[in-house]
Length: 282
Image (cartoon, rainbow, N blue to C red; front, top):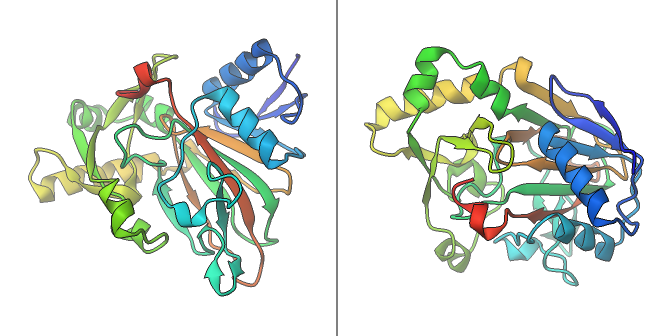
């Protein structure tokens, strides 16, 4: 296929050209793209033109579909597609997350089988703000101070869908909450295909460190959160209409800038999981 790959972040995040996701891609082409994406953690493809069927077909080729618990923001025609938007329809939000800023997080860490990869397709993009920032958790692990690494190894974290910073952005129903009880995840994870270690820290979903006094655990996690957000690990993506961006939730965290409420932002989101035999732990 001859992919055109240009790294745009500090040692990760790649713009990938020479491919149309709406086309009939062979298994070999999908595997080449998957490998480039895994190595770079974030894949950015510009000028894509995808129907909903195209979007779902590509996502399914990459892995088992992940369906988000917040069904109120699903596409009416295709519930596997979620809307991320500040737009309203008859006074009700059309999509999730509004126009405010979002802090660092990794998607669906609060589920027993988290979303391996999240994909966003840009339909309407505001002129100002709304950038997505990605931080490289593998590089952050590799460069961790020795004392911080020693403190983090072997630890587990309690994550919750109801963590304050998340529940304010996307409130959920009692039924949805019942389907997503709090879970514990390892703080350091090993990539199932590449064998690299990464910090698995999601500040927006954090509740406490398992088995540690609350104050001590909070201090450790706070130090980790500050570490992973250092500029040396971060790539900022400025969205364009037609962008498809997908990222490895085992290897990066992301956050978003606020943008003016009067400016329209509408993206379509899908996600895919690891094969079941590799899903926990990943």
